[in-house]
Amino acid sequence: METTGNHKQDHHILKSNMWKFFKALRAQANPIYCLLAASPMRYAWISIHDKADSANQRRITIAQFVNSLKKIPATDKHYRLSIRLYDPLTDRSSTYEATLLQELSVELMRKMLPSMIAFHCEEGARQGEPFELTPQMIGHYKFKTRYIEELQENINNYNKSKTTKN
Image (tube, rainbow, N blue to C red):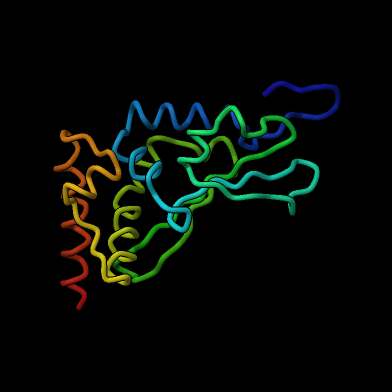
């Protein structure tokens, strides 16, 4: 990274970094982009922090970030991406938080896809609304037809792990 005076630039995520990441995700891992962009805030969100006062923050959905890019502040802010995950083997939920630039990785998101899907499935089951690839669900998430098989495989793997465990 460049240095300015005696201060080395930090590696925190800036608005431009976050936007480039989502563009890359949309192009290289479209099902993950669609899943995150249409997820409610309790599943995935972006936190915007003041550089001067990290306690001063606000949360927005990924869709709000993508759709309101010009209205979102770029200066004096750091961004954090948070994604809820679920591990059926341990029966535990967790939150992945990308706070540094190197933590925004399309490859890492690909590795986390099964845990993202599992979280959607687990939360849906708890609410009595199973996460299934119905035409309505496909429309809501804007999943492309060519990715349905891969997504269905992840859902099936989650369901298999739950029935094996019970």
